[in-house]
Amino acid sequence: MKLLVPVKRVVDYNVKVRVKPDGTGVETANVKMSMNPFDEIAVEEAVRLKEKGIATEIVAVSIGPSQAQEQIRTALAMGADRGILVETADTVEPIAVAKLLKAIVEKEGPQVVILGKQAIDDDMNATGQMLAALLGWGQGTFASKVEIADGAANVTREVDGGLETVRLKLPAIVTTDLRLNEPRYASLPNIMKARKKPIETIKPADLGVDTTPRLKVIKVEEPPKRQAGVKVASAAELVSKLRNEAKVI
Amino acid sequence: MTVLVLADHDGASINQPTRSAIAAAGKLGDVHLLVIGPEAVAQAGAKIAGVAKVLHAATEHLLAEPAAALIQSLAGNYTHLLAPGSALGKNVMPRVAALLDVQPISDISGIVDADTFVRPIYAGNALATVQSSDAKKVITVRAASFDPAAPEGGSAPIEPAQPAADPGVSSFVGAEIVKSERPELTAARVVVSGGRAIGSAENFKILDGIADKLGAAVGASRAAVDAGYAPNDLQVGQTGKIVAPELYMAFGISGAIQHLAGMKDSKVIVAINKDEEAPIFQVADYGLVGDIFKLIPEIEAELNK
Ligand SMILES: Cc1cc2nc3c(=O)[nH]c(=O)nc-3n(C[C@H](O)[C@H](O)[C@H](O)COP(=O)(O)OP(=O)(O)OC[C@H]3O[C@@H](n4cnc5c(N)ncnc54)[C@H](O)[C@@H]3O)c2cc1C
Ligand SMILES: Cc1cc2nc3c(=O)[nH]c(=O)nc-3n(C[C@H](O)[C@H](O)[C@H](O)COP(=O)(O)OP(=O)(O)OC[C@H]3O[C@@H](n4cnc5c(N)ncnc54)[C@H](O)[C@@H]3O)c2cc1C
Image (cartoon, rainbow over all chains, first blue to last red; front, side, top):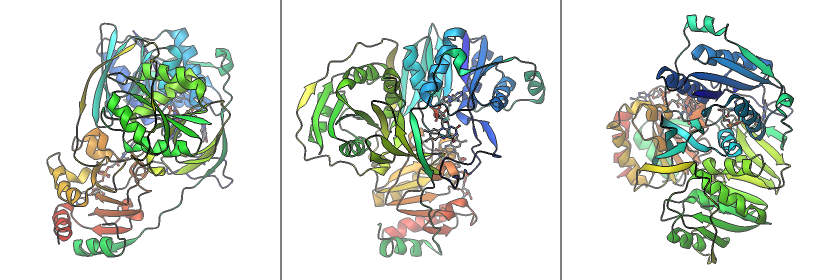
């Protein structure tokens, strides 16, 4: 079975982003970019399914600027077989990402699409659910365990209060949570091999999708800053301050 | 304008994040509450202040696929479709949005007008004000940003909602839900959190004394959850729960950006860490440098005085 794994190029999770002075967005020039961490988990899960003999081919897809090839290469080095870059310099919202992915799904015919539960830049937590809706497929979001057998996926999900397991008919959508697995580091030989794996580049228009944003960003600003407070010397002083100064206990 | 809010519940009562979503909805128009679940939950919903009508669809398990189909079938009557930004809301609402060809607006922390909303991006390091051009708005609400509607005071009529055809692509297998005596993390007045420093699941209990004394919810960092010291739903942070209690106490948590994203709007922050350079101290109102295993019993003793 074929698996599709969308991987997003985002500002690295270690970077503390700065809001642009003109309030139009955040500073992304000269900032370290990486694969969205949840997507690394998605690639890892796909590679494990291939290693177990359940999957036969893994296609990594990214929608973004030409540099998003780097993130596809990372996926290829981790074990994906080939890549598709939908190249665009524009802002692409989840609704458009989902439509582009739907078009690719219809071409490629994967049995499972594994996405990250959320991209750590825009924090929308939406794309997988939207793709599932557009395809009319079942969705196993926030997965901490995935078992595929007999034309179905049993997905254990991280929900409020604990865990829930759903059974999805294939084809289906899975979105990854943090506890699904620990992604591997690509080895040097695999990084070398990945250079030879094919990446196809297409444009949103080739897929017949209109990516005009529905949300207009009016402004982006910094949240109010917290001031560092005081250090106290003892448990007694702490409790006394909480009682008498902050009055919260 | 009439706004539909999807209720999140545990099969008996409606949670506080839903009441926050109801409060947010009230700023936009009349509020109808959709309860998918047992009759008792619909009755609880009818009592919430500000709810004009309850729509009730009786089902045993709330799965995203039939729930989204139901909301799509009701959407014609509403300008805005809201849900709390809980695991349920995040699972269902983007699916609803796609069915309606709408770009959802996730996790709003403010309402400017009927089309314009504020939402945190980049782990809360930036606040974006976005204006939607979609005919209907599909929104999840950050509970910590809206004071919840009162659980009592309303007396809304309850009407049955005709469940839409189940797409039949998913089924419920089972759940392991831990019932806790403690308040919900996102609703608690005080949150006491432990990090990697706690060291084991067994050790996590050392927070119980302080939590009991203060009526607090217990939270955890991702490192503590990943290590299996605490269950997943206690994770506070960018990719866990967002909390804004009166008092947040962090024990042995370093203060990574992703953790701060989940708690930095707390009114008062206390940090206890043996490393005086730990970044958590940069946001703490009160910092105490030292070993948590020595200080936790001392703090507990002081609270008992
Ligand atoms: C207020 C605001 C400000 C914005 N600012 C910017 C900006 O400064 N710069 C900018 O480039 N964009 C910006 N955007 C657009 C934003 O990046 C898109 O909305 C984004 O492509 C999708 O949202 P998300 O990544 O949060 O989706 P999520 O639903 O959180 O993503 C979940 C998963 O979907 C998959 N996925 C999502 N997007 C892609 C993709 N492009 N390629 C492959 N897989 C993907 C991944 O598997 C990911 O883990 C902004 C949007 C808004 C609303
Ligand atoms: C995609 C992604 C999403 C993430 N989402 C989240 C999230 O939602 N929430 C979250 O919390 N993290 C999240 N993280 C992880 C985050 O980056 C940090 O790794 C994590 O918060 C660290 O947890 P910690 O502070 O408990 O552990 P550490 O960083 O290891 O800190 C432990 C602290 O305990 C102190 N300490 C040790 N022993 C003692 C002692 N005996 N007494 C006192 N102090 C002691 C140390 O000085 C140190 O400061 C995410 C990361 C990624 C990449």
